[in-house]
Image (cartoon, rainbow, N blue to C red):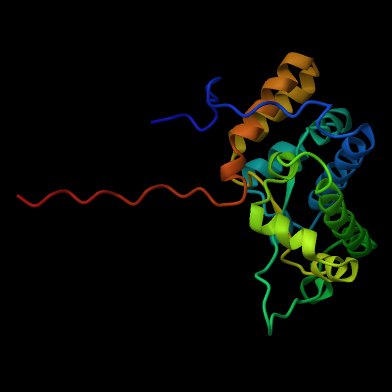
Length: 221
């Protein structure tokens, strides 16, 4: 069985180096990752699908100190995913306030709405970069990238208001988060670069749950 955290050099995507994103965009991405972690680790958000990490992943993140969490946020890819509902006539987009967490701290909802809008507009800005940038940073398919490119600013704001647009990435990959947290505690360039490589290797698994295969039936004799 292949270890999901094994990243063979010949199959590994190229690390996202600082040159792929201009410094200002890299800083914006770090800031959004930091906001996402802070919002998602607030008390009472355990059952919110926008921050639906598994319990081991949430515990791993919660136990990190501020400096370690800041290094985690500085990874060269988003720690959150964007999910755009299929476009078409009759499509309705529920508002964020329709699904707000009843136990969220005071002021949390406003900060979340600000984060969701920033995340959507950063994705739009990344369309002007290298063709693979959005794929590596946000894991967005060509279809989603096309929709982003065709959407007007008012439409982007409406999409950002949907409670379904933000989802966690690697929500069940506790080993990845533990390794990333360990690398962030060390803070060495080699450890962090390897952790970044592993994150890129898991891009295909970022936005889907990992379920064990169904048991095989024994052949009848």
